[in-house]
Structures are given as C-alpha cells and as structure tokens.
Amino acid sequence: MVMFRRVEELEAGVEPPLTELLGEVGGVLRAGGVAGAFEVRGDEVVGRRELVHALRVLGVAKVPVAESSSEVRAGFYRLEELGFYEDVKGDAVKVYESALELLVKGWPTPLVKLRTLSSAGRSVWAKLECFNPFSNSVKDRIGWAMVEEARRGGRLGKLLYEATSTNTGIALAAMAAIMGLKVRLYVPMTIQKVSDIYLRAYGAEVVRVPKPLTVEAVEDVEREAGADGATHLNQFENDANFKVHLRYTAKELDYQLRVAGIRPRLIVGGLGTSGHLSAITYYFKNRYGVSVKVVGVQPREGEVIPGIRRIESGMRWVHWVEVDEVVDVGLNEAVEEALRITRSEGIFIGLSSGAVAAALRKLGEVGGDVVMVFPDSGYKYFEQIGRYLSEKGGE
Ligand code: PLP
Image (tube, rainbow, N blue to C red; front, side, top):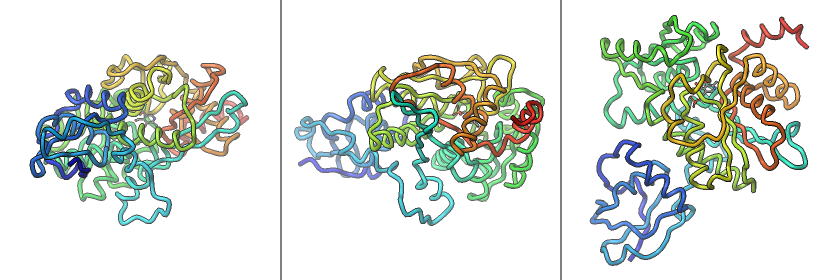
C-alpha cells in the first residue's frame, strides 16, 4: 500500500553537495512532481536517495512510500499533493514564539503591484525584501540558512568572520545575537560609513578593508579565520545561499504569483553574490520554461552601487543558469529611479532596488506581467541619497 510520510522522518544518508543534486532538483521542477513511490524499510529509503535529498532541497513536505518494490512503480504525484508550498504559505495571524520564527514564518515577503509603472497591457510587481526583520533585506535569508546549515553539519564555531557590504553582516550579527556567538565583519572602504554604526549596534566588530569590492576581501578573511579558529561562512561560495533562495524566495514568489493569477513574462533582479537571482532563474526556467525572461542588473563599469557588482568580478551561481540579458546601470540612475518610485508609490526603496527599476525602464515597454525583486529599503543609503539631493538641488 502506498502511504504518505513526512520527508524529514526518512533516513536517506548524508546530503550530497548541491552540484550533484542539481540535475534531480531541476528534473522535479520540470516534471512538476515525482513518478512512483519510494521504497522504505522502517525509516530507511531504499534506492533513489538522491531524489529524496532533491525533494528536501526544494522543501517538499511529504512523499509517497511503499514497503515493497512491486508497489512503488505506479502513479505520478504532483508537487501540490506533496505539500510543496506548505513552507511558503505564511501565517496570517503573525504571532511568533521567537525572533527566528519571526524570520522564517514571516515569509513570504510582500509582492506589491506598482500602479504607476503598470498600464493596460502590463502590470509591474515588486517583491519587497525589506520586510525581512533583521537587516531589512534579502540577506536575512542567507544569514539564517548559512548559520543553520553549519550548525546542523557541526561546523559552527563560537566566532564568525565574514566579508560583507552591510546586509549580510547585519543578518549574521542578528543570528550571532540569537545564538550567543561573536562576529567580526570585513567591510570595503567604498561602503557608506553609517554601516559601521548599524553593525556595531548589533555587537559586531567591524574591520574596514582597503578594497573597493566585498568579494576582494574573501581570501584575507579566509586566512584570518583559519588563523583565529573562526568560522568563515563565505556567502560568495556557500551553496546554502542558492538553496535558501530556491526553497523560499523563488518558491514563495511562484506561490504568490499563482494565487494572484499572474504568469510573469519577465523577472528583473540585481547580482551581488548572484544567489537570489540565480535561484529564481533556475526555479522559473525549470518550472515554466523559457517563456519567462530573466534580466540581471549590474553597476556600470567604474561605479559603486552597494550590494551589486559586475558579473566579471566573479560569481558562482549565475553560471549555472541562463540569465537572458544583463543591463548596466549607473549610481545616479539608480538613485533617480529609487526616488521616482519613493515619490510615486510611497515605498522608500534602496539603491540596488533603484538599479533594478532603472534597468526595467531601459528595457522599454514590455507587455505582460513583470516582477522586480527589490533587495532592501533606502534607509541605509542616506549618504548617497543626501549627496544626490544636494547636487541636484533636491528636485
Ligand atoms: N542588493 C543589496 C542591497 C544587497 O545587499 C545584495 C547582496 O549583498 C544584493 C542586492 C545582491 O543579492 P545577491 O547576493 O543575492 O546577488
């Protein structure tokens, strides 16, 4: 007899690296489910263990199991039947037992239609990552995921070192506060000064490094962490980054779009580590095919837009997926667009969000539904915004 069991109850051995599971993960998304049940003996899965791990990566809640191999071949089980969206449905009442629950059960972050950018032929939506509670940014997701995965793997020490352009630093400092750890953050000189105060308010030690880009500090951080016995989670290479965006950010967005009856033609997002946009690209292209176009946004050569950088500066996940186009945006364009949206929609968005919106403007009129991912709000960038306003006379 085929029954459903919670996937976390099943024993399938140690999870293989993501690169080995990716084929199965994509296959499940493309098929929209799994063919046949799993054979189990007690709690042990017999065969197809990689597929069980792939389902765990995707956050499938339950799987069909049978106790004899003759019973497992029949049937096709759609993701919806397997509780695929269970972890992204959110909680309407919003009462939480802890700050960690506030983060994880607080998802999904809102998806909001921007009326001033929408017209008869298209609607434009923004996913507002500033609704994450700690760093008020998309980076809370990876701070949590990297720390949790290291903890589960027995690799989490009492001291964390990380290179950050602010948001990951705040997210990790919050996790450190919750878990009683200490954190040292390496921040490039090009990042706004106020970040030191936010990070120190959280109890983090801040080291300013004479490099323009965060990623350029990674080797030094790795060496110093090794010398001091600290844990270097390394957001640039840690697959927990891609995985948390696949299981939550991308799946959440998919769930929200389904409930709202929207089939996006275009998704636009920024590239920093490339974690969130690569996972969204991977998810949507596998689940819905190439009809969904994805556009990435990078700063124009020689310009600094905090949080995003140019692809050629080296990124891990963006090379696993097919982003259709990459658009260059200058800092002033990003600030201008951020202010335009703030002044027309009433939502004070950040500079990388402004860059995403500026990229959409550059693409011209796109028919159909469009989704932009806005990584954070404008409150951390008053130095850049203030400079822009005083140069332009505040108009
Ligand atoms: N925008 C902001 C404000 C960020 O802090 C970051 C990441 O640091 C990004 C965009 C880019 O996100 P990702 O690292 O997922 O590519």
